[in-house]
Length: 401
Image (cartoon, rainbow, N blue to C red):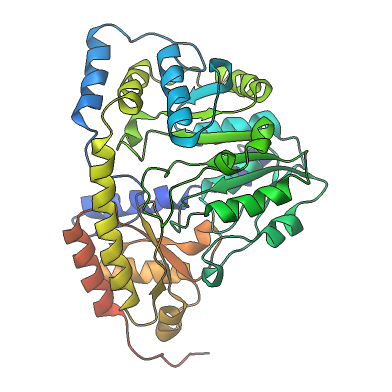
């Protein structure tokens, strides 16, 4: 009898970002010279004072189960962070600590959505959002925002996307994959739309909050629209800010009833996040923040280089971003020059001909683009651009039947 896989599992796909990284690693292991610009994680080591806190936790025996929703010391550090940085007040019962911000969002979807509920996810979007919604039997609705509008949806688009079935709006700013960040005025305008739909909850994914160089200070949605407090979950984590991707700590603050339901979901799946990682996260949030400024400065320098370099390539254009560590390049002209059908074929071409691994924009809901991570050395970025330039023709090839 053949093995039958659930329809739930069949309707989702593997993460394209993880797939590209795995492929690049496999090719490297086979001896091929590959520059991988696919992984979305800082290339810096976890700062010493944070790593030392993890080591101390092991030596002091903090190696047992904790509360499902996180230790009180970390919840208090999260509460202090939200108050200090975002002007948002939470109590311990409103905080969840999880195995990365990804699990926070998964818990949210599982706790909130019933079959057929719709979730508005602006495109381009992080690759996992729609699939997590589908795993919870929800339906992703993805209004498109292209380069002509800075990859940010308008209030009119948001209003048009909301229906009687809409249950959740997911907002990621600064964005993966584009690095675009909504201004305070833009957030206020979106909030004014959401106020007309009291059944719609909001999840704000602020994971790149600190990797930011926008023209005005970063703002979370609740910072500019506190009247949405009772139906907003503010999501963040230590992975990107403190180069702690492998430590797997995300956190959120939100309505008590919803957090309780999310805790139940987590309690029946993974239970608590690593006890050791939680102790390290306390040191990250409550300790010296100079390491964050130093890493962000390096990311900004790389951003400035890679955006200018991409814009110098034939058939490629790239907008400046306000944060994160990705360049999202429009390669439709280069695709035409090469006679390639889509951005998937374009990424295969770069991998095979230039030895450079990037992620196709279609995985983020935006065809004709590629995402390059500049969370790597300047030397790697310069070599990658040289390789790409060498395989991009200046003139359009004649199309074949």
